[in-house]
Amino acid sequence: MGLEMKSNKRNKEHCQLTKDNNNNSNSFPNANATISANSSPRKSRRRNRKMSMTPVQRLFETCKGVFSSGGPGNVPSPEHIKKLQAVLDEFKPGDVGLTPNMPYFRPTIGQRTPEITYLHLYKCDQFSIGIFCLPPSGVLPLHNHPGMTVFSKLLFGTLHIKSFDWVADAPCVSDVMNSEGKNPDIRLAKLKVDSDFIAPCNTSILYPSDGGNLHCFTAVTQCAVLDVLGPPYSDPDGRHCTYYYDFPYPKFSVKALSVPEGEEEGYAWLQEREEPEDLALVAALYRGPQIVDK
Ligand SMILES: [Fe+2]
Image (cartoon, rainbow, N blue to C red; front, side):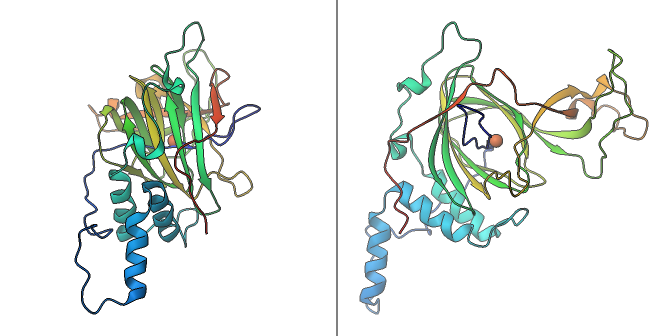
């Protein structure tokens, strides 16, 4: 998730999780691999450097290659996506210095909403890397990722994800009355995911127009999500984080927009909203293995 923090909130970012499977056996040389007789000393040194990288440094170096030509709506190639997904698939909580018993994940008592912590690892114009730490019942409200490709790795815990994609060519509808007689601007979206995800599970990816570009996270247990966004949120570049309410399809009746009979539960109306007042999202200093940007 990528979220714009206000006052004490900053560097929001974010994700979506599916159960895709890949392995990275070919991405980086095995430590025991035999070096061929015609390998040059320079190639051997490069190979040794990769083998000795921390997982975080390996992630950073991979992101640099994957997002080097990135921009809004410019999705990385399938080969690049597989490469980054494979690196993330191997990530463990210890690779970023996290354990479930850290203070970020303690249940909150007596507060309206549990506080969610964002650990910032890196950000440039092409991509950002960060971790969301959610205590039990922590909620990242429904939000979008305009023009972005987002990789998410659930490091530990159980997370409920509800995600949507806009229905193509469905206009924003303003001439609609709800039961209270109000006139909201709403738009039709298709439900993509509404499930619990349990770590360990593989990295998932959302895209600018599919894969569940709008999503809401609810922590069933304490959990940590490692997120890579390419490109990151940027207000000056028009990539704002927008929040939404979601309403069941039967709540509104729009003549020009209908879904097949019996499939109503697979759709919802989304309406823009202000950033929720009760969203408690704070930034904290990342204390795990550091990224070195040479
Ligand atoms: Fe997100």
